[in-house]
Length: 172
Image 1: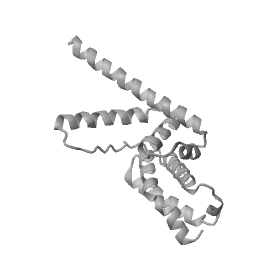
Image 2: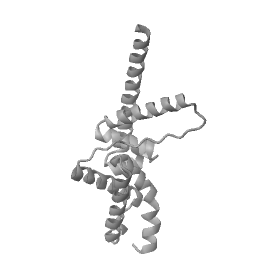
Image 3: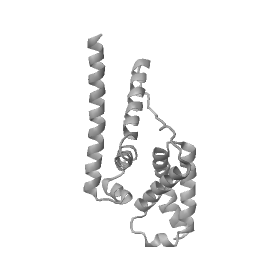
Image 4: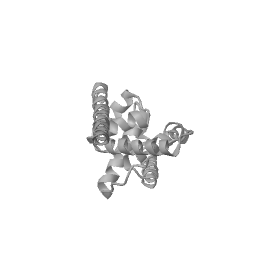
């Protein structure tokens, strides 16, 4: 793979790689480091990349593995950064939205690793099921099942929390 091919096929994925790394590592600086380290590794192995059939999926899977290696090495567990787009909301609505986003992030964090990774790749990164299947090393059907189960767990937890809040309100 030559420099122009590398730039077009690998470096063009930098933003996606950063978002994936940030969602896994929960730290912007660590995500930047992970992307930079992966790009260096891929550059060093650029000759072998010609043998890869689906380069974007391979690179995304490599990013996931790079992040998991970093977590194992450093044993870091920093909080996921929550960014909310404000569009004319009142301060109360903004606080409610921020609180809800934080609770959903906590619920996602409590999911099993595979479900957590799949829901982030699909709902945060917007990846296709076939690409998620390749990156995760499972079938598309398994991706769909895990995604459905993850969403159902979050939905159930939200309903449970809502019922508890309603009961508190009515019992006071």
